[in-house]
Length: 285
Length: 285
Image 1 (cartoon, chains in turn yellow, brown):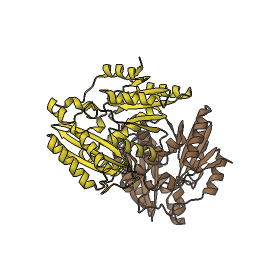
Image 2: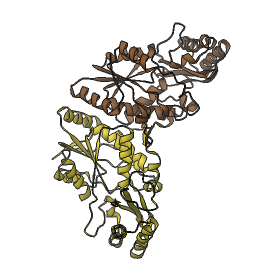
Image 3: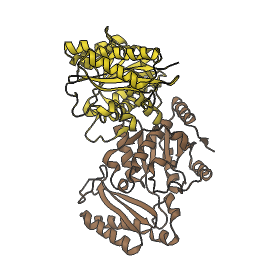
Image 4: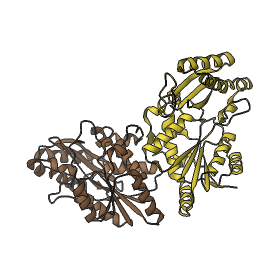
C-alpha cells in the first residue's frame, strides 16, 4: 500500500528526501473519485519517474458558489486502493483547512486564457486551478506532472503558468479514456440519469463527426460547429454551452483550419444540472 | 569576481548544481543601482548560506505607466563590482525579453495586502513584485531569501505569498541602512535636488518622534500621525502621501497601539516628482 500523507510539512519533507536520494518524482494531481482515466495517468507517470505522488484534493477555489463543491463525489478509502493498484507510491490528501487557512490571500492569475471557454461559464475556475497546482508543485516538488487531455484548457493554463513562473517541472499529458460508447470518463458522469447517460455519448460522436468532416477536406470552422450542434440537438436533450474550434496554444477561435496549425475542438454540454466537457486535438498535415 | 549569469536556463542549472552538491543558496533580489543598503543584505545572506546569488533586474511589471521605469538608475558594471566586494558568488542579470516574453500572462496576486498603503498610490505594484519574486525563486532555487526592511510592505506581501503558495524558502529581513542624517538609503535619492535632499531627513526624524511619543506612553495613533505630519510640513516642502500606523502582519490601520502587538509605522512623502518611503517597526512591551 502507498503511504498516505495528510500534512503539508510531511509531504514537503518526503519530497525533499526523495530528491536528495537522486530519484525523480512524478505528481498526478486529482480531485479523487478516481476512475480509469486517473489510473491511466498514474500508470503513465511510472514511465517518467521513480516515485509517484498522487494528490487527492477537492479544491474549493476552483468551484463557483453555484457549483457542485458540496456534492462532488468523495471516497478516499476506495481512491487509496485504486491509486495503489495503479502504482502510486504516495497519496497526498491534505485538509482544506491547512491548504487554505483563513489568512490565505494569494492567487495565481493567467489572464484571458482563464476567461474564455470553460472560464466564461466558470468564473475564477482557472484562477483556482492555477493556484492549487502551484501549491501542489511546491509541496510535492515534482520533476514531472501528469494531467489528462480531458481538461484540455486546464493543460493550456498550467503550461502557461509553468512557463511564465519559470517552474522546473515537465508536463506530460495523457489521452482521454472513454467508456465503450465513447463517453469521456468523468467523476461527474455519476450525476447523469440513465437517459442522460445514454444520450451523452453524442458528444464524442459529434467530435468524431468533426474529424470526419476535416478528413473530407472541410476547413470552415462555422460549418463544422453547425454540424456538431445539429447532431447534438437531434440526438440528445443536452443544452450546448459552447462548441469551439481554437488554436491549441492560445485557445483563440479559428475561423478556419489551416495546415500544421494545432487546433483544439472542444465543447461543453449540459444534461439537466450536469455539465459535461469533451475535446479532440486536431493537426492537419 | 562572481560569475555573471544572463540566461534563465543557465541560472536554473547553476542553482540545481549547487543544491545537488548539498550547499545552501541565498538569494538577494535587487533592481541594481546598488548602495550600502543592498550590500548589507548581501553580507547578511552570507550568515545563512554557502552560495549567494544577487539578482539585478529592473522589473517593469512593478512600475505603473506613469512611474520612473525608463529613468530608473542602471549601472550593471558598477553593481557587479560592488556585489562582488560584498561577497556575492553569482550575479543573475536576466534580460527583460526573456523574463517577460510577449506570450507572458501569469501574475501572482496577493489581494487587499497589495491594494493598501503603497499599493494605493502604485496600482499593480505588488502584483508585479509578487510575480517577479516567484519567478526569481523558481530560477535561483534559494533556501533563504534576503530582503530589506526599507520596503516593509514588500516583505509582508512576499511573506504572505511564500506561506500561501507553500514556497520552501526562509525569509530574512535586513534593517534599514541610513545616511548620516538619518535618510534611508534608496536608489531614488539621486533624484533629489540638494534642498530636497537636506529636507528629506525629516522623514526619519518624524519616525523617531513617533517612537519618542510611544515611549512617553502615548497610544493614540491619530495623535502620533498628526504630530509626524506637523513635523514634516513644518520642516520640509514634502507632500505627504500617507502616514500609517498598522498591524505589522495584516497592515490594517490601528486606532491605537496595544502591548505585544507588532505594529508598523510607515510613510510616503513626495519631494517634487520623487517619492520617498521610510518606516519603523514598533512592538510595545
